[in-house]
Amino acid sequence: MSTFNNAYDVSREAEMKEPLDFNRRSRLKHVDRVFKAEILNIIHLTEMEKLYQIRLLDPAERARFSFLPGQFVMLEVPGYGEIPISISSSPAKNGYLELCIRRAGVVTGALHRAQRGAKVGVRGPFGSHFPMEEMKNHNLLLVAGGLGLAPLRAPIFEVIDHRPDYGDVNILYGTREPAQLLFDYQYEEWGRIDDIDLRIIVEKPDPGWTGPTGMITELIGDLEIDPRRTFAIVCGPPVMFKSVCRHLVEIGVSMRRIFVSLERRMHCGMGKCCRCNVGSTFTCMDGPVFDYWAVMNLKEAI
Ligand SMILES: Cc1cc2nc3c(=O)[nH]c(=O)nc-3n(C[C@H](O)[C@H](O)[C@H](O)COP(=O)(O)OP(=O)(O)OC[C@H]3O[C@@H](n4cnc5c(N)ncnc54)[C@H](O)[C@@H]3O)c2cc1C
Ligand code: FES
Image (cartoon, rainbow, N blue to C red; front, side, top):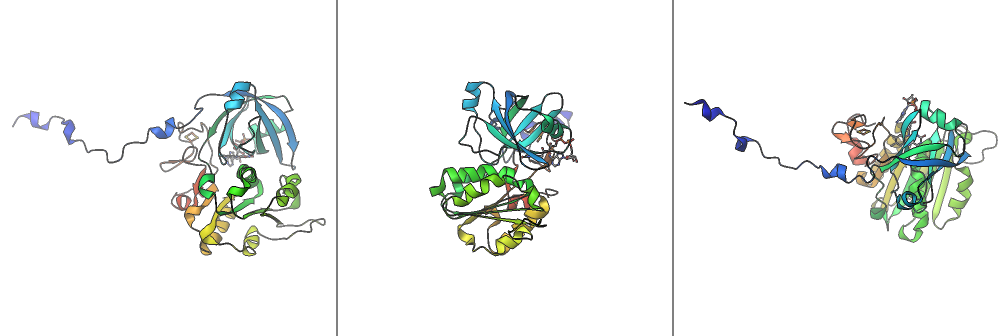
């Protein structure tokens, strides 16, 4: 027997059943570009959160920049670092982006000290989005807890901008205390829109609070939800979205029709650094928006 028979034979290689999805990365639009941008305006929302209106400096880039509800950008604060932040404005407005930012640490702390006119960098938009097309002609249940209203605001604007395309819309929002409510100046406007029912609840009322008190799931109990006609988006801390999603599944809403936005530590935002992965899932590219079925199958996701 010659050793020749044992030589490497390429035809012995197992055939790849499913080709690697290299296209997943090439679908990203603005990959490595950092757009120079400036802070156009800063709106004080609460003790911990501010809303930043950010404008790309180049008018041509500004006109081209587009995103889908649920996507995020990587916001660079020169000298401090870069952080993922959900886009909180209407996709129809392309003059500027709105980002609602909670003061948490180094980069967000620097942003909270920044003034109008400060220069920043923007990469993106990145990530998956809420399936607004698929949701058309259905009822929508939009549920947010605390800072969860930031990623929910883009789909709310999308629905308002295309109101006839959707059925009944219920928006439920809850925080621990009234002082933590975000965007309170918009509630009246949202509540006036046809068939949009906005309900707000707080856990710990202050003396001026006249609305309902308790957990957000108590608001869901008051709604008549037709599970066959309803899509839900749930954004908020894991403890909140888990209980809301469980409740929705119990009343018959399909896990595939409930969408959540997951927050992980991210570095590159585009599948290069492996900081954000849960198993083989990259939350920056496959997420941050997932349906509840996918979340249940992601180990350590929540
Ligand atoms: C897809 C996505 C969208 C996001 N959208 C928003 C948004 O709209 N508004 C907003 O205020 N924040 C958002 N975040 C969280 C934001 O990115 C972090 O708060 C930020 O990176 C903190 O940076 P820092 O330098 O200020 O804090 P650091 O100094 O890095 O850390 C301060 C504290 O914050 C915690 N922290 C840091 N990063 C995260 C994170 N990604 N998730 C949870 N805790 C974190 C740290 O554990 C530490 O306790 C989002 C995160 C992701 C992944
Ligand atoms: S943040 Fe780098 S791979 Fe997801």
